[in-house]
Image 1 (spheres, rainbow, N blue to C red):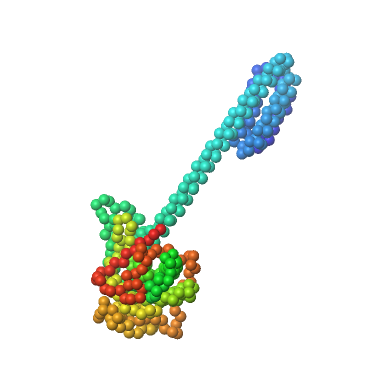
Image 2: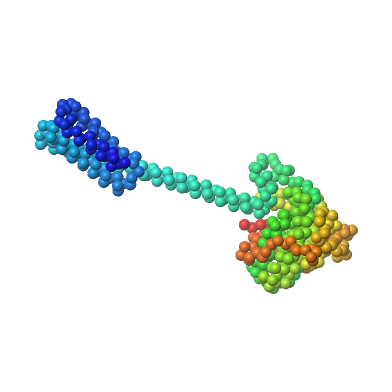
Length: 407
C-alpha cells in the first residue's frame, strides 16, 4: 500500500511538458498541492498503515528523498532557478520533511503507547474477571460443602436479610415427611485409635469418610455431619424423593462393602454398624456466623438408637423404613429384635436387611485413592460419644448432631 501511494505521487511529475508550459502561479500552486500530498502519505505511513517502525521509517525517508529529487529535477529544468534560490528551497524542504517525520514518530509512539495501555487494561480486566469467576466457584463450593445445593441456591437468591430478621427467613426451616435417616458407626474404632498417632488416625478417617461422601452422591443421600467415628446422612431432605428408604438402605449396604475395601487397602480390622429409621424431621439452617444445615426430630433420635442396637457388618432398619421400600423382593429381611439390645427403641419392630445372595450388590463405587479422599474434619475430641463399640445411652428425645468444617 505504501509503495503504491509513493509511486502514484511520483508519477505526477512525469508530465514534463505540462510543467514547462505552466505560468509561475500555476507552477507554485501545483508544487504546494503535490508537497501537501507527499506529507499526507508520510503521515499515513506512520499512523494508518499497519507497519512496524523499522519498516515504516526507512520507506518514509526514501519516499521523501525520491519525491524531492524528482521535484527539483523537473522544476529546475522548467524554471529559472538561481543557485541561491535552489539551496534555500532545498534546505526549507529538508526542514519541513524532518518536521513531518518527527510528528510521524510522535504519533506512531503515542499510538503504540495507547494500544499497549488498552491491551494491558483489557488483560487486567480479563484476569480480574477470571479471578472473580474462580472466587465465585470457590465460594459456591464452600457453601455447598456446608449446606445442600437446593438451600444454597435459595439463600443466594434471597440475599442478605434486613436487621430485624434472624440470619435466615422462615423459608429455610421446614418440616418434611417422610425422610429416611441413616446413622453409621465404626466398630473397633476405639481399638484402632489407641494404636495410631493423631495424624495417622485423621488420615484414615479422611480416607474412609471420603469414600462415604462419594457414596452419598451415588445413592441420593444428603450428608449431615460426622461426629468422631459416626457418619450421619438422610435421604428425601431437603429435596423430596419417593425412593428415600431404598436410597438409605443401598447407602448402608454400600458403606459396609466400602469399609471392607478400606480394611483390605489399609490393613485395618474395623467394621460398620448401620441404623436406619424413617419419619418426620424439621430441617433447616442455623447459625449467624458459621451456618450449618441440620435435621431435628424424634425420628433422628430413633435412627441413632437403631444404629446402637445394630450388629457389626449389618444394616438395622425399623419396620417404618421397611414399609417405604417399594421392592422388597431384592432384599432379605430377618428379625432385628433391637429393643432387646437397646431400651431406647422399646416397642419398635426392627429388621436386619441385606441383599439376596443371587442378586448383585449395588454398591456402585470403587476404591477411592488415599490422596483424593474427602476433606471432612474431625471434631476436637476425635471420637464419638459411644466410642464406636458400645451403644449410645439415650439422653434426649430430640437429638442434634453438631460438627464443624474446616476449610
